[in-house]
Amino acid sequence: MKNRLVFLYGLFVVFLTTACNTLYNIKTIEIEIVEPSTMSISSKFKNIAIQYNNVNSSPNQYLNKYDEFGEQKTELENSDSIASHIYFENFIDEIKNQSFFDTVIKLTPRDYSTIRIVDTINYAPYFSNDSSAENTLSSEQINVLNSGYFLENNTNPVHKKTDSLILNPRLGLYSPEQLQRIRNATGAEMLLSLDFFGASDSRYFDRRLEVASEQVTNWTQWSFYSLVEMKYVLAYSKLDTVSWMDFAANLNQARNVVPPRIDAIYNAAEISADNFAHNLVPHWIQVERMYYSSGHIELQQADELVANGKWIEAAELWKKQTKNENKNIVAKCMFNLGLACEMEGDLEAALAWVVESYHIFGAKNEMHAENCTEYIRLLSTRQADMKILDQQFGNQ
Image (cartoon, rainbow, N blue to C red; front, side):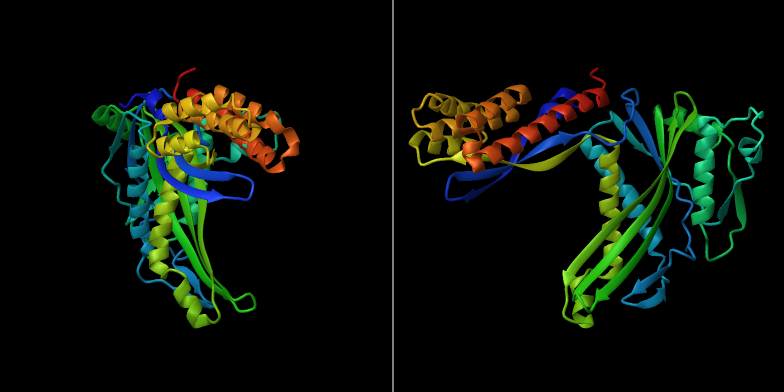
């Protein structure tokens, strides 16, 4: 596996643009940083298996209906099925791309085209009004309850299915023997199972506002299993909406300014897959940073060094100018030194330089004060994120 510390603190310059205003010469730069995931997977799970386990594999009598600019239609293509595979493959690709896990193993998909899901578990004793009853649901039973409720209420096939799968009271769609076989065959510590994927979509035209819009909502449910403890850890349902919007003078134009319906469904599946992967693991994102440029000869040289990714050399030039008698140059160079420190992974030093830059003029120079305040906020957020990342990577 790639060195996790390198993954965590590495930064890479990808794009430079320039801009200016009447007070300062400003340049912007796009860099990549690591952002923590919103969900937290224990660092003990280093090897995972992922299975396409979509029970919604045949046409769904609810999700195959859509609104086409005010006209209700029924789909014949079963685009959900194709979109579910696009979603699944893109999710795996993005998980692998982030290099959080040591290994990611894709399992053979399970086929539910003729199988309906049946929940025969009697939950009544757990929801009794009798306060003396001591029956309580375990975390695994709660996951099965949530999963079964979601699957039974959202899987409504157009054609009757001939076979049945009865939910396991502790593991849902899996049996203990199936999980054991997966563990033995893969050596994985965790199984991620895509249990449901469905897409609902609509296209609208607002004549009053002259706006065309297209919206795709992806419905997904994932199950997380610990193969170490043979335990159902989490049943996680998620809605993700992807929208397109543009101006249109009439209905004919509206049809042309938003993507074709099927293209939108498939593109939305890709976007939702990336979104969920980023919810699940720490991930790279592109962010924009600004720094000051100047007509000063040495600062022009620093611009060239930055363009070539030579931050340490640029920082040496900026640091030299912090003794300049011109306070404008001093404030700019201190600010730039903050960015150089961030690029080198030293956020504490970065904050110190930007705070010092702010105090050159304080609130008297509103634009510089605003630039410093915003950068201090960003650096403070990154410091908090780094603590979370340390936990997610198991460094604490």
